Image 1 (spheres, rainbow, N blue to C red):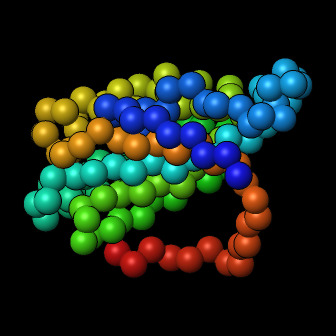
Image 2: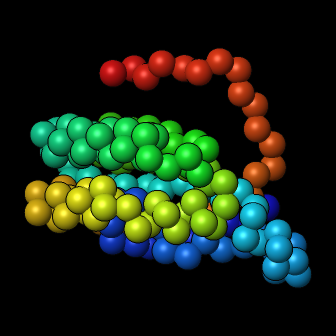
Length: 143
């Protein structure tokens, strides 16, 4: 399994997706392969800031869902003990990542995050290679 790590400043900034080693030998597959990643977003240890970040991220993800058909999965989880949000994201291909990065609502999210000083550390983004997946029925959030 290949795991790539990038530290970034915005909530959901992804930078450039890293292809799997096999895709390096096949340029056609590199541009059309699904891209999976997880993003760790560390919020200041303050309940009000965590709740505000949850509101912003939830609204952001709704906009992604409405406007980006190339985003196949976007899950947001919260580790309350660490005040960290974790995302699991799957993009259809590099084009879907590029569309996501250029979205005005991503820029709005990043501006709000900076203005409200919500974060205590830079994001950590890990690009993943899928080994196996198990899905049953959708699980409703515990909100």
